[in-house]
Image 1 (tube, rainbow, N blue to C red):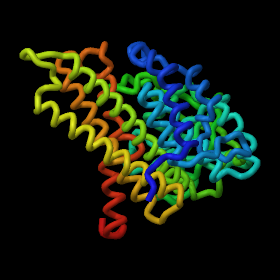
Image 2 (image 1 turned 90 degrees about the vertical axis):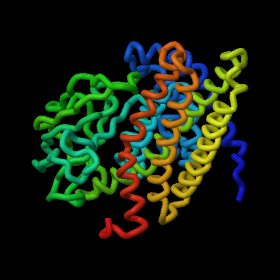
Image 3 (image 1 turned 180 degrees about the vertical axis):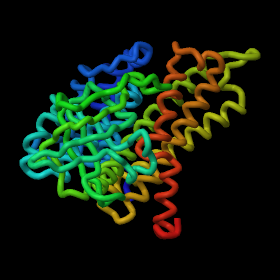
Image 4 (image 1 turned 60 degrees about the horizontal axis):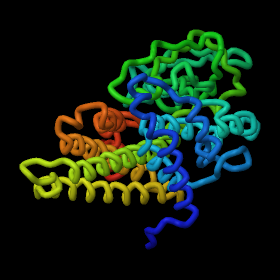
Length: 382
């Protein structure tokens, strides 16, 4: 069992770290303060192959592994987890087209998605169905060579900025088997947007309601057959959960690094904070839990790369463990900073705000436990 990264993986990691240090970190607090979405900077990441990380290379993708992707998002999130997380969603959408799209669709969409000429959003959650995603109500009615789509999607990253929307909608009866996936282009008549949501964190990316009022979408824009849309959505989320966990990991590592530096600098009762055993133990626990989370996340990515039968369970376990750990570590780092950690100047409170939502999106951590329990006990037992 070899835990060492290859030379190529180390180069990938270094490239992502350099991009994060130069293009993301210096601006993260300002983007958060202004709620500014740095599309131009995100598109620069595409020039480094970070917009189609695990898309096949015949259509412009990087053709890398899920473990490579985890390394990239861990590194990027140390610069800004909000921006890194948006890029992870775009990558998830691109992979769904690559995996489930017909050859003509791959050739049409993926070169522009991988070059980020087109920015993608993932549209599953609705105002009335979050964790119960298979109960979605957005309806696509067949009318000749088009579908006529009516309904709405909630909490959509990208909002009205994105160029394409991977939409999970109902083309058949109730339940998962009635769901299909459509690619909806920006500018489609009947496609609309709510206001940009005012959020606790993730302020450097827009989030909005996306509405469909009789929007006509060509049948040619459907991914795969009718009725497999829920399968497509869930397959995308396996990788999405690894990516968002990696974003938690990288940001939490930054928080720990900041806390370590602060403990050397700050003095109390005539001694540096680093001399107090209570804080030493806190730091030791933070380091131990982060290292354990990292090892488990890398193993889950390895299993998804191999196509292991228990890969979905491991992706769910990793998402739950790493995002819970990441938030806990960031929150402890804030505590170590005391009142200064509560100020925006130090950047710690932003990490806490950004990482909180990672325990909710890509499937709540409660749903991750449901997935794991079903795998252990059988679907009918839970």
